[in-house]
Image (tube, rainbow, N blue to C red):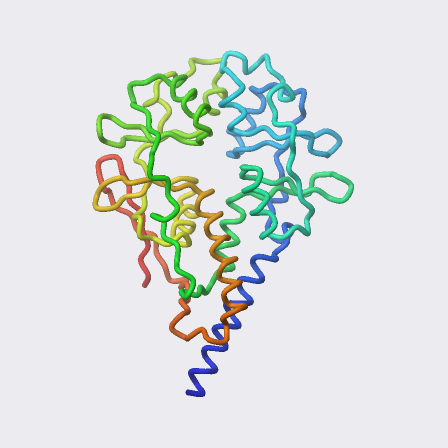
Length: 326
């Protein structure tokens, strides 16, 4: 009994400290400090070339090393036609409201800011207002993977099926790109799975549409098959949100179709996963603070490092990813 009590107390202490450390981690500890910026007088075509060349989804617009706006993939979707890419200046289409934080802002506070403003990135600024870095959802996902080593199953685990979007907005491969762009703008979504009949055959994203502007001086693709990605990446619905986060990080993607019983039942995004993971950790922290003295050893699950990502085709155009612990 004494040995069990010691092990339980050690696990409890480890779980508490792990969650507390993550929630209170400051921006400066994990932000991306190399920030790709652009001047407001540059053209939208310049911005598209920079975004595609650097493989990023957001540019910070700066003057005198201070942020005056951000230019996102969504701005391209909602405000720009490919034909106008050389005419419009960045200042004409950028989002002028910049949500910024200090280098000392905690991860917990930042995730709430992202939710409140419905955004995926925060600009980190020094006291004098100059740019210090940027925090993205991918940065937060990396922190989750690095810091969360133990979870308490007394707080019910969250599975992908619990946070996915069941109603998938799709587009047929025969439709034109401008139609798909209109759908994405109207529905405020960042990607569209592509179908041919009942089958999922591809997916394209805001980033893929920005790539059209890169070739604005040449023949611009106008059909969905020219720009979509295939095969489409997917995961089982019974993976935990931490498993899904791991797959997104290592497969470098921000959305995955969800498959159960050999059919597509939903789609899950990085936003869904990161927000749900932090909400889970906040509940876990509250539970351990109030019920820690009665938590049993069996309540804890250690997240193992010896996990492999494996994949197989679940259909001609669907690649199913899952995890195997060895």
